[in-house]
Image (tube, rainbow, N blue to C red; front, side):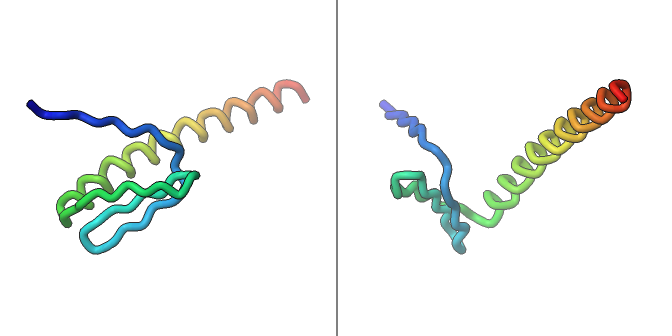
Length: 73
């Protein structure tokens, strides 16, 4: 039988070492994840995709606000 453990925490800090990713939460608790170079590349692609989506949504919201402000003037 395999045991699954889920940890929920609030992000505070991250350190990317040579072969380990270390997260620290607001309470100072640490999570260490062993990483290969390929793992880092995969993580990078995932984070870049997420960041691009967030930037696009924010740009759309800003454009919408700018349009509303122009209409109200």
